[in-house]
Every structure is written in structure tokens, then in C-alpha cells.
Length: 103
Image 1 (cartoon, rainbow, N blue to C red):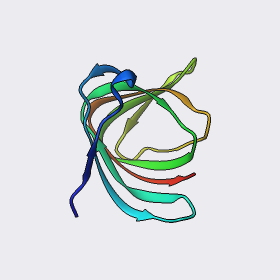
Image 2: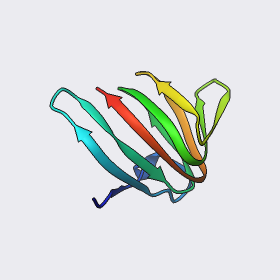
Image 3: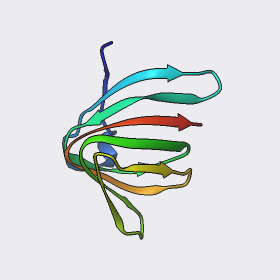
Image 4: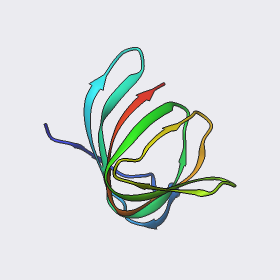
């Protein structure tokens, strides 16, 4: 299966030139998505309208909620991001995660 290529929209990028590769393994009409996502180094603004559970498979990233403390994410770390989360995602070392999203 070939990955989908993507990137943050230019207005969200704060540093670098990050590139995304996504392998969608599940996509349902009820709004559940699951797969593997990988990003190259860079930093961009994020804002979540959905629930996402993920597990870091490799790499090193820093997720920081606006007004909050940075979360340093490495292989084995797991997190749930809830709707309304806004902040930055910084990929320090190319990061791969598996994820489940519910709209």
C-alpha cells in the first residue's frame, strides 16, 4: 500500500518544511479513521475538532498546548488528544505513530 503524501497548510508552518506520509488502514462512514502517520522535521500549528488516540512508534516530537507545558513524545508514548486542543506539533526527529481518530 502506497502512502498518501501531505503537509501542513503553509499558513500553519512555523519552522522547517515538514512532509507527511499516511497509510490509512481503516476509514468508516461513521467517522472512524485508523492508520499510520509519519512526519519529517518541522513545527506547525495544530487544532483538533476530533478525538485522537495515538502511540508513537519511532522518532521524537514535542506537542505543546497553547498556554501549557510541552509534552516530549518518544517511542512507546501514548496520548489522547481531545476536541478543542490547540497548540503546536514539532517533529524533532522523523516521527511515526499509529492512530485512531473519531469525528
